[in-house]
Image (cartoon, rainbow, N blue to C red; front, side, top):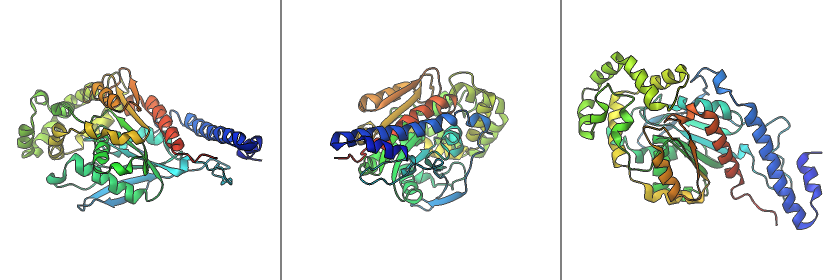
Length: 371
């Protein structure tokens, strides 16, 4: 006899059934948590960036091909997706988590999240336009607002059914906020959970995000006009970046992380940064200074929302996360003491634990109640 059936037999009358439903939900969480615990440290045992699945191509509304990878859910042995009459249950297989990466990175930046959640919940990863393996955008469409429309296209094509949790890091979090502005009706129905990591809804000092990328002495002087001018000589700048490899590694270590991390983390992040052409950086750069979407955060009031940031983040400082949390009093704020902008790597266990709690809340959201 299944655990769930035994639990149901305990209930007698309305109160008993309600109690059984609560305990059954807890049992599902225990199964989920046990599987999560078993996967701790999985990412450290694998080569960074080595996790992939058969890619699919999602075509954005302007024709740009987006590289997308999906890790499917694998039910535990014996399964727990049993359809008991009058006992509705949501499982990890009913949910898809879409991960949205940041500026100058690609989907490989989610290495530790991918290792930790692979098979435990359906997950979608994709390269933003002009990044990684995705196609190049026109300069005109290199905007946060267009990234939001790309995200919607990925949801529509890669997640045709079911409920969605969105997880965005840095520019990826901005993409989610922009989606909340353009399509608020999705939040609370289609989208049932949001994680905003090392990001902001506005008020960013744009030159700060280029500090790990630019040669010494240029970062603090960057303005939109200067970036635009430099873009005309993008190949020269890319050459300078390659010649300044030692500086780039040191800058990445200093600005992407808050403390000492394994050297492999630093070179891995630097490989993504250096692999993003300067022309792409220049095209997206103006959008950061113009970003002002704090007023639309209220669209997230309808879903469980977790905000995560390192207290030593030098690019999108923890003050941005605290401001978003203040505007979303129902949200959960997770501050990782001493961690930097790449908190998803530096404190991946803490980040994954916070995401696990978010997924549990999303699974419980609007759970049908037994009368």
